Image (cartoon, rainbow, N blue to C red; front, side, top):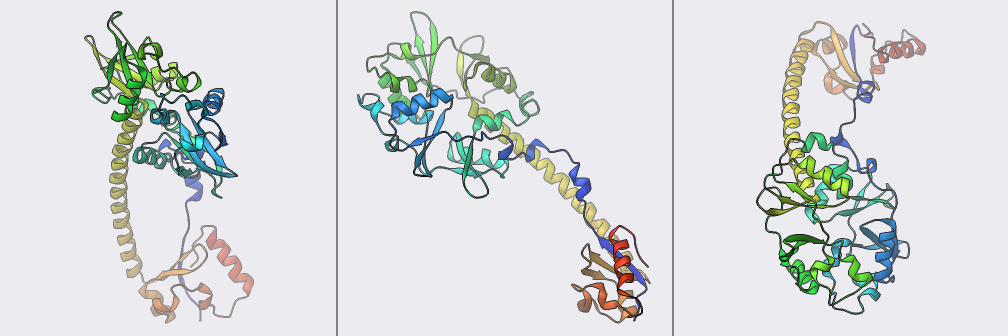
Length: 373
């Protein structure tokens, strides 16, 4: 039996897709992470941990037990410490570390990492490879630096997207008391006001590291506070704020206007705004996809109508030759019903009048883009 008709080959668009530019929306963790894991033994004393972090200019360190990562300690964990404890510098890191450690695959999207940061209120994630082995670390800073900030933040004003109810303490306030207030209110920073000088300073979690290396129960807030302040006007853009953070290697800016200090803007505020921009863009992309899908479905419906109405026998195959659709004329010409051939190979239509080489050449011709009739 011979078959006279059309074979339509359903192929792929790999060549076209390969030249498409890579959008920042699809950046992966492996594109931006730091491929080094700073770690220490769980028995390491806290003072040595802080010195190690300062030597490598990092804000987090992982804790090892044997070959396994069992914990993490960051600058933010300083707020949990009791600075009245004279033995604080000799504490073993295992007693103050956070565990278990949150991790993310290097092949996951940056948007996935941003979601984990937001859901768990953390700043660092351990990066693991395809074998679940540690291969680096990714931080909120890495996310912000690699998301096309001009596009996301340039025309977004600061407005009220900052922490307005910031804690302000007098300059003579004892540091231990201020740290207790920070802990109770879960504050990243406090502002210190010196009435005599009519000046403000700021204390961040990073500043508290100094108290581990050089404990001093009698120190006042003003003695530890950083000054002058890095300030940004409330009418400035979020991109201006980020640029100021980057230029001065800080994660917090004081927001002010002509009259007074309004609050504090943090790096986390920027990541939240980027997430909002992601959602806005995602809605547009989904809307465009739905329109394209509806258009494609209409075209497919019309194509099926034309194929079904054709007097030529037509079968549609995948690129490997497996039949996925036939029209009514095909059944009339061959006697095969759709259920008999779908999932089969066209070799079932062989008449036996041609050699094997004939069919090999014919299929090669079809695979190259030709349509055989």
